[in-house]
Amino acid sequence: MIQEFKKFIARGNVIDLAVAVIIGAAFGKIVNSLVEGVILPPLGLVLGKVDFSSLFYTLDRSHGLPGSLVEARAKGIPVLAYGAFINDVVNFVIIAAVVFLLVRMVNRIEHRKEMAPPPPATKECPYCLSAIPVKATRCAHCTSNLPGVG
Image 1 (cartoon, helix red, strand yellow):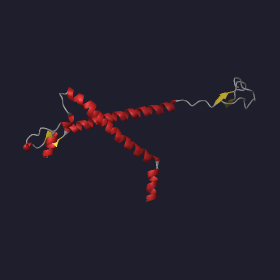
Image 2 (image 1 turned 180 degrees about the vertical axis):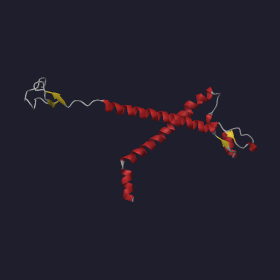
Image 3 (image 1 turned 60 degrees about the horizontal axis):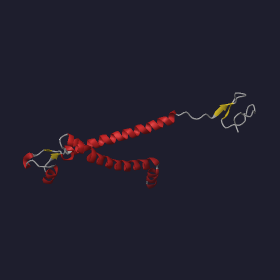
Image 4 (image 1 turned 45 degrees about the vertical axis):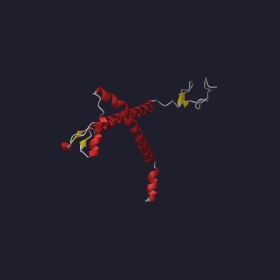
């Protein structure tokens, strides 16, 4: 079983997947920083100085209304922290858009590679009209010296 596990781990796909997960986690942190530090503050300002991360709804009002999400959590008051959900949705949309653009770009590059015609491997002998290799200096069929070749 250990040998089979070593063989499984040594396969290229597993290593590629591990690298993708690590890079994805780092990318997620960058996007999270972008959303919380750059995108949501101006959006909150436009919407009336709202800090999305602190938006919540108190489920149990018997303890009184807490002044902040931090206070509600410290007192153990059950709340719906929908502001964090808004942040996560924005993060997801940005990550999905970036992944879409990356996949689209890679697909275009791959499509261009497929569409480019391969260079010709043969040319026509001007004397006997036979197909000969492009690098040929003499025709294999009529043995003529080809013009324009050093």
